[in-house]
Length: 113
Length: 112
Image (cartoon, rainbow over all chains, first blue to last red; front, side, top):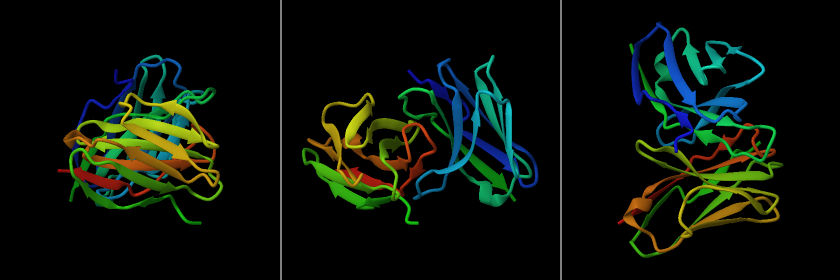
């Protein structure tokens, strides 16, 4: 049972344009969401997070949007740069309890110069 | 400060053997989690330890086990290796359960 889903395994975007990565979840207990970025041969690195009390969190070129009613979140990267080419994982947890981080299957983002 | 350190980085084992992977968390972090990454499957949660106690366990067979020591270092053991166990095994540490996790570079296990 995949509680966190990233339905697009890959995405290609022109350099300078906006990259939008999507993530859906099914567990209504999830209230804290994170995005991780992973380069080949490296472990994932934390990118940005959002609590369910917010619907948007921005950090530089990265913005995460949360739509609780749709159980959907998205990561926007503007403008996209070649160094953004990586696999992006979204993750979710129920922060108030003893819950682990549950990850999606990842989306491979390729920025075309 | 030093990040999460996993050893070894690469490992080749034969079917039926057993393997032990090691993870040293960031200093001060008491929570250590293990994940298996295979193509198309994302990061599959194995288990999580906090202060030497297993707090969460994923849906993996009993061949997969782990432990955490008093210095928060953790080991993961896989017995009776199968070809399907070939994967990147990632360890992550965090200050507490469910806070932002910091990952190591992983151990690439190949079972032949």
